[in-house]
Every structure is written in structure tokens, then in C-alpha cells.
Amino acid sequence: MLPVISLGPLQIPVPQVTLILSLALGFILAERWACRAGLSTQVVSDGLFWALVVGVVAARGMYILRYPGAFRASPWSVLSPNPGLLDPVGGVLGAVLFLGGWAQRKGLSFTHMLDAITPFLAVVQVGLALYHAARGSFFGMPSSVPWAVSFLGAERHPTALYWAVLALGILVLVAHRLRSRPRKAPGGWVFWPFLAWSAGVYVFVEGLRGDAQVLANGLRVGHVLALPILALALWQWDRFQYEEQGN
Image (cartoon, rainbow, N blue to C red; front, side, top):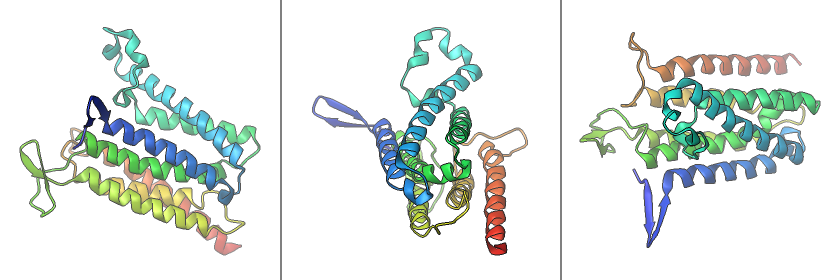
């Protein structure tokens, strides 16, 4: 946990800076590797920029709908830069819907567009894990493993760091897959494996979390969300591999 770095009078909020840097680096990599997904840099750059804008607005809007009482005392807080006031599901849904419309407007394949932004998603996933590690959230259950960290009066799994290391491995796999992408590869050739790897990693780290949301029947909310995504990604990945073999 490293929420702030003090440099004299300057207080640097580590979680927020980490997230901003990952967004910037992800944007740069998406632009650089756009051609490997068969798209122009300009199209990917513009689409990704506006998808981010729409995603943030949708994430804040969904949070307001879910927790309207949080803004009654201070309505201007809807403009707060605090990422904790964003609903990730609403943000992702808004960004994906926008990208679908963007690709259709430009006469592009939606799945090729998803391939093009996968480097961005892979980098931001690393940044998000480090954000939680620096903030002290996404902490693990009590454990006696030699690398356990002391937090809230107990030795715990460093789940945010597990996530960060595994997400970094996924980023390396994404880079390799982009470099080896066949010229006539179908749309989703990069995105569906990335989504499957990411969902699988999340299922693993969610099972070790000490702050996970749990439903009345004992199921973890993260598993309820991630397992269907994992199944969808594996199905799509297997489907286009079968189509490739048929050709």
C-alpha cells in the first residue's frame, strides 16, 4: 500500500497517477500497433479517445443511478475526478456500445476494432491492478504463505500484486499475438484470447480476495460476472479457430 509519495511540499497520489500513466501508455501502444490489427492509426486513435470519453460519462451516470443519495448533499460532486465514483460495468458497456457504432460508421469490422484496442485494455488492466495495490483495496484473505503481506492486523495474500503480475504476463502474450498475427486473421484473433486470459486471471484472484462482495448464497459477485465472460471468450476463441481450420 502506497497511497502518497511526498517530495517536499509536493504530495503525489500514487494510485491516481498510476492509473493515468497506464491510460496514456495504453493509448500510445494502441496507436502504434493499430496497423497490426489491420486498421489505420487515425481511426483507432479517434475511436479510442471518444470511447474513453463516453465510457467515463456512462460510468459516472451509472454510479449516480445506483447511488443517488451520494450526490444529494453535494450535487457538484458529480464532476469529481475521484475514480471511486465510477461504475466500471456502466463504463465498459457505454464504451463498447460506442465502439460498435463507431466501427459501423467507418465501415469497419467491430471485432477488428476490438483487436486494435486490445493493447490499450491490456496495459490499463496492469495499471488498474497497481492502482488497487497502491490504494490498499482488493486485498487478500488471511494466509500463511511466505510472501504474505501484513494488512489490517493480519498476514494476507497480496491479491492486487498477483493480479498485476499476471496482467503483465497477459500484456506480453498480447504483444506476441499481435506480432504473429496472420495477414488474413479473422476479427477477434487478439481480443478473444485476451478476454479469456483476463477473465481466467480475475476468477483466480477473486477467489483469494478478503474484501470480495458475496451474495446470500455464498457466491462471489466477481465470479458471477467473470465466469460468463470467460465462457463467452472461450466459445468465440474456439469458434474462429474452427473456422480457420475449415478454411
